[in-house]
Length: 517
Picture (cartoon, rainbow, N blue to C red):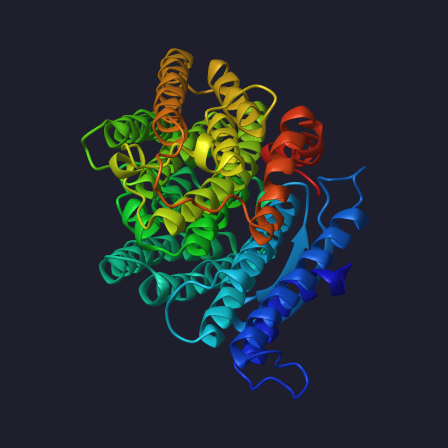
């Protein structure tokens, strides 16, 4: 198990290096480009297989215990260690990352985004995967920061080199926002390590803030929280996200929404909540206020984009929807209760599955029509997907109703548990304030349903294809292979939420309480 986790983290880096080498004789296939794309599918598939084996070998009777641990001294002067491990909180995120990266590599094999050589594309995709997996597996604050930063450069180049219109400006905005947030976060991490005498996240969580004064915790939470809030993204630090999503290639949008946003909320759960609980309690009402503001703001922005005549971009609309959905995650974390935090973790996974599927589908619509402009898609010669590509239309409608939180699908449970957590927040937090936040969040669910149903009506519904209009292709075989796992897992998580909650709940209970692990 130790070797398996280390392989999952380091394997993509080795694969990235190999992708830049010439293909061995006999493996080139029809062309070197095809060979390197096949290499990407092979490496990400092997990582996914290893993650599944790790999940199957995980001791589900003790999900609160760190498993598959590696603990090796790295920088003795600072007591920085190569410390890896997984528990019920990080395991689902590891598997989600491995799954989405594999599906993106598979999709790219058949539909490579236009741009430079596939060698660089595959190498960057694998470096991105390695950094993201490491973020969810490392248990040292310094290593966490390094892994957190590793993903920025490959995502920057994926947007800047393989993106669409406005890609350079969007890529610069992404890198500047996230780097600025990371610098502030590093100061907070160093403050905790210096004052506590260790950077070990397990030891710090076990201590549960007892070795840090309240003032140190408040300063640390402010610094770390700002850096994590940019990556989440929390309103009003979200403005880099719509541009990045709109300009990114399809697989870039899938990974950005499905995986990278989760790094910020994971940092809140893994670092801020257990290590600085007093500081978190100070800022929890403000975090909840920003969270519900993001829920309402994201929904209103989507309604404005969906309105006829506003020339709304469908990719941009889905990006703004992420601001609202991640608001529910932050609201659950801000309650500081097991119910709310479990809801946040569930919503993280649900958002990764559903929004990943949505970006795949919107990318397919844009490829077929040459635009994601809603007015064009809804026009007389527009999509009307039910009549022109019924399977594509049905999948888009399915992903939309899953995203609005329809009971029985994955999107429902995370939002409901986050609202339940706000109904009865942790001791020391103002219940009237959180009841107000709960009411605003519940109103946000209505706004979410409104804009997503408008999108389905405008894009999917309409008359049959007019005579003489060119037909469009329905779901292709490679698209079916890339999208089916996401749709199936969305149904599975909705009908059987205990699969995830059984993993996360014991780990969350212990994380919030501190004590021996």
